[in-house]
Length: 192
View: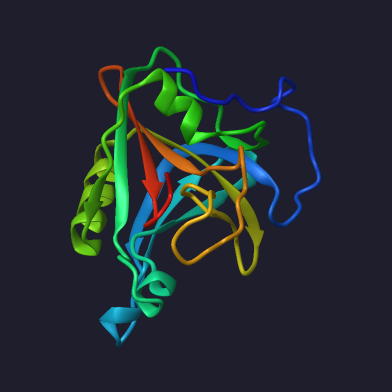
């Protein structure tokens, strides 16, 4: 499976800037579903990894689109899974990422996307996190109360969002014991 690699000098320091497109990797440390007194406002899960010298890094994954729901569109995530063997775990840390384009992956592989209800997606991601020995994810860096990434989904225009970011699609890859890995791809309503 051909997926983007971090910059060639993986050990180099780089300036951490909000919204920089990065890849993070490390051992899973925690899985959490967003909590809210109104279940209709819950739309994320968080996977925290041990990212080497960067410490704990949070991967924020959308499980439902509040904006699509408000605009009258299907708020469910469309989820695709691409399995492949792994032979070496990625280095733990946070690294600049070149690009990730779902269309390129889809040209090379047959990927079926299925509309997934939020609770089912939460359960799927929780089960994969529990089994994984390493988690790798692509997305936009955020520097709030903690270091993390978000935008872990297709960044192409959708039913409710007209901005079209090519080559900055986010995804998460789970590495399992025994040499198997699965990359999970996420699309919103209207993303081709």
